[in-house]
Length: 254
Image (cartoon, rainbow, N blue to C red):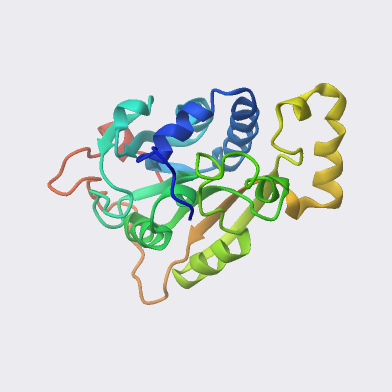
């Protein structure tokens, strides 16, 4: 990962970058993809690690009732309940979360693998993880040396989807679906309507070369792990009993 000059909190800077002309196009494509991937998920708690207020509307389409946003500066992350914590040390109870969204979180944290281990710890069996990442095997990866490489969004790890898939497999996750987005180069001039054909052509003929990938995986249930009975009381999200499901949520059958 290249050091992000004068940007101690790159995820907070990324939230501002989403408001640039190119960033708005990225946010639109990512939000639509997250909405498709999350709409059939259900449960009590959905945790978003890393800022990105543009996902609020997309996550409203899921059946998960409570959304929690975790960031080092959560006041920059609108939507849902806010917690201030580091991604590698989540203040959440084990096996308490139904789904986790990582919007470029692994691109910009110092050490991605401990974050994935924490996500595995807090997810329930059959819980889902959604990861959004910049694809280095694309025009975005090839051109990051041109666009101020020490600045967000060009200074991130840019993990390949296959490498991330290997890490998830080692942690006991099973890949469910993966999509590549944004086949145009990261240039403002590339987002005119006359170049819309690049998206359709890229998705059909070179799908692995999209500038962004969105991955969804499920936490596999070990045969040695007893399955919780439906009538067992759901554990609280936070150690100590805070943020328990409401009476209405308790009646929600998994």
